[in-house]
Length: 88
Image (tube, rainbow, N blue to C red; front, top):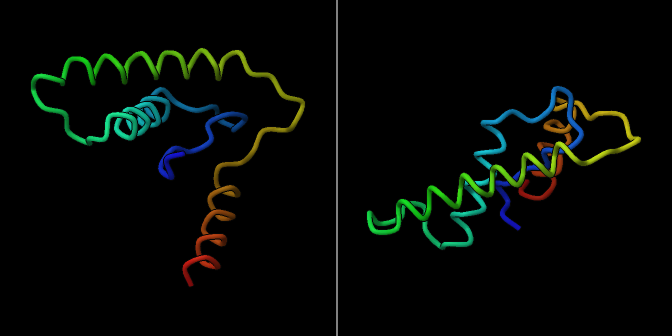
C-alpha cells in the first residue's frame, strides 16, 4: 500500500473530490512505476487516474458504517504521534 494514500471513508466532513483524485493519482503512480509519464503514455495515465477516482468515489458513496465519523484533526494528531515514536 502506498504510504501517501490516506483513508478517506467515514470522516466529517466527507472526502473532497480533490482528496479522491489525489489518492487515485498516487495509486496510478505506484502501479505504473512513474510519477511523470512520457507523452506517449500521458493519455492512458490521465484516463487511469480519472477511472480510479470515479470508482473510488462510487465506493465511498456506497460504504455504510455504524461508527461515528472520525475527526480529521484528531486522526492527524494520532498519525504525528505514531511518526514521532517510529522515527524519533
